[in-house]
Length: 159
Image 1 (cartoon, helix red, strand yellow):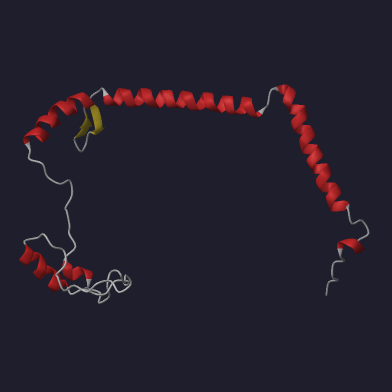
Image 2 (tube, one colour):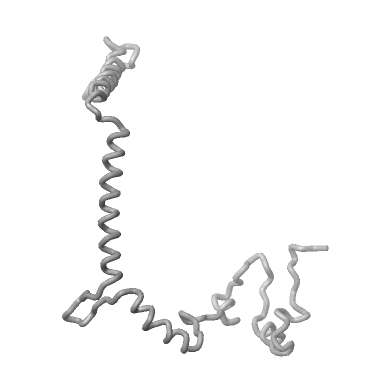
């Protein structure tokens, strides 16, 4: 079996780990101090990185503008190409103006039976309501009322 490590106060040199830590910190600080006259500072590092980023961004914008204003093939074997944006707008806008408005995606509504399909009310703090009674009240009112006259009230709210 190994012997248990002694407590810090019982060690022969209790301050030795702290001294190593301090020496390491002073060594790193002096290294940074020595490199500073050579021009390696946080400002020069960020300036150099900013120049590289700006050059890359300018190159990317130039390529995008070239693609946006030219004709070319994306995949010639499949017959997929690209055209200038202004030409594409000239082709598409008249088609969109002549077509009647329609939803961009299918509009779905929650059916009354879907709310109680799981056998548990959607909002447990409210008393359950019969979906058939709601549908009957809406049909009878012509779509104006949301609940029948004899719908249960919220028991949490008492006058």
